[in-house]
Length: 165
Image 1 (tube, rainbow, N blue to C red):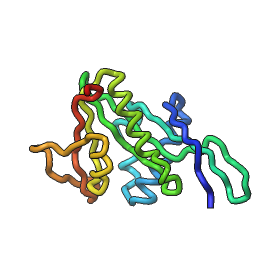
Image 2 (image 1 turned 90 degrees about the vertical axis):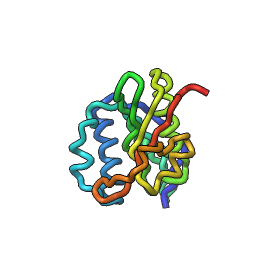
Image 3 (image 1 turned 135 degrees about the vertical axis):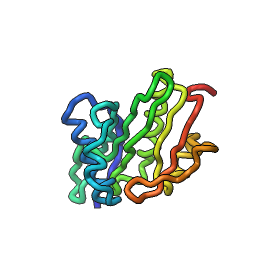
């Protein structure tokens, strides 16, 4: 069994990296969670978002180490002067347990604060609600109706007053 270690998060700058992020999203959302491929590849934000990729070292069974193996991704989307959106958070199943999801969310929240955003939202899968609540995201009264994306229940969750304690 392979072992992942030494995660590094990088803001991508090249089209090749955007394709790596896309492939990570396809692996998790399409192959693992059975969303339609079109949901991932035909998205208005694919070319209009900032994307981070988590890379790790991967120790193989024979003891060799592969460097810079992409294992997770997340995207940041500007919506308005004050509002942004977190989206497409994925970590490959074999790399889970390294707190990469937490690290990816943290970096997007920090980016929002750096850009002067006050509000961020996410369309969270219902079964991931507790994960996002740990960062301060909440389902707000009046916006608490579950909606479905390709049959999968989601909540719109918000975090307000980013960067203000």
